[in-house]
Each structure stands twice: as structure tokens, then as C-alpha cells.
Image 1 (cartoon, rainbow, N blue to C red):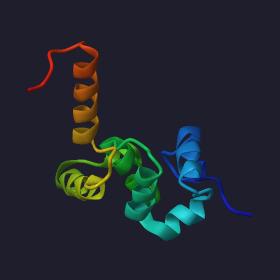
Image 2 (cartoon, helix red, strand yellow):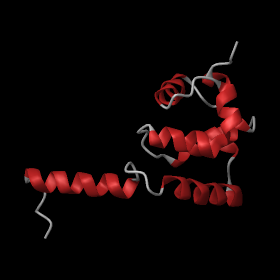
Image 3 (tube, helix red, strand yellow):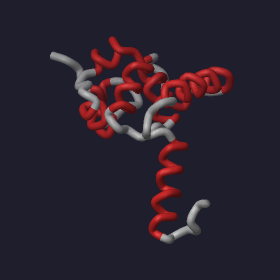
Image 4 (cartoon, rainbow, N blue to C red):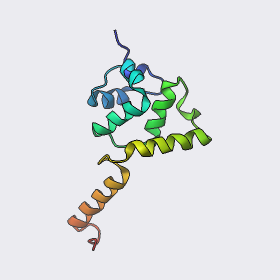
Length: 113
């Protein structure tokens, strides 16, 4: 019987729901995919990119506490995260641009020229 996603350290019920939306239902699937591909599938399924969520996954797959990520390792993970997020409509820059355009359209903020 497969282990639930939440059996990976640092991951809980919210992670199980997000991974299920991406078609991933077990810890073994995540381990086989590795953190980058598993996170890419989350993004493809519409999960909003969040750096902490990414490195929590990486640390969990290594059996480490989420707050063990520091210094140069964290900087390197940030580069991997940024590369993973490129091209997804859910990227922070795209979300901000969409929000600004919507607020402008509704007249909440001055219209962009």
C-alpha cells in the first residue's frame, strides 16, 4: 500500500490536496519524480508558485526539517525554483500584471497607459 504524501516530513494535508490536483497521490510518486519534477507538476496543475513551499519539499525529501535550509544552499535552491517557475502563467510577475490590469479595468487604480 502506498504511503500518503503527508508521510514525507514537512508535508501535511494541504500538500496532499495540492499534489492530488496534480495527479500525484503517494509519497513514493514524489520520491520517484524528485522535487523539481514534482513541483513542476504542481505548477502545471495551477498551484501558485511559492519558494518556501518548494524548499520545504526539497528538505522533506532529504528527511530534514524545513528550516534547515540556509545560506548558499538556500540561494542555490532559489535559482532552481526561479528556473522551474519560468513559463508558468502562475508566476508572480504574471499574477501581479493580471491583478494590475484587472484593478485598472475596474477603476480601482488609475488606468495604465
